[in-house]
Length: 293
Image (cartoon, rainbow, N blue to C red; front, side, top):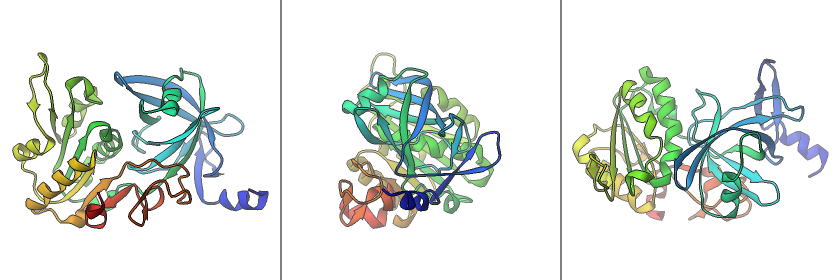
């Protein structure tokens, strides 16, 4: 890319230099350096990693993003891969939730506090939080897809007065595969109903056993807006269940998980039908892509 093109691209998105109150323009094509400042173990193969994005002078940069967007995260010498932003824009620090799935994610998870990795973004469309305000909201996740929904849940918790009844229904394979268990209490304290289920119980588990749809039978949410992320089979089952309860398909938003390589709709790796998940998603309404899952 020549210098003129780079200067033009730097006007696409902005971040704010912490402590300076000025805007710095950032490029989607050039990775920012990001320092690892904390690592939490969520499960045996999943880490929640806190990052401090840096500019060229090693000063902190604040990225503007909304729940549902993602970053391209790179490990020098290995490559890059898409990772959903797990933190809420209402909170610091920037966080990603990484599940071991290949050599790049292994490289990310091998990082230690103080190490540097690269990040590009944010990319894609997020959840339409403005359309959700003043309505009932049902947030349903399965497996690792719940990492994407954490951003939305914490955003709603921090703006609770803007939303009506809010329900979270989350399912994982076993109790040991559940994410963010330490946060359920704070969500409930914020007036969010939280239902948890697992496919297979152990001796310590006293909660629900079964599919996420079994939670919806108990919760019986009133029609409104829904946000879903998880395996396609789960998304279809939950979406159909919600429609039977009076939800409209255009009000059911799903986050599609696809292997995205470029983040700008050029490489064709993430196409679903004629849609590019990296640019036209990853958030779609169910009426748009339901038939393509």
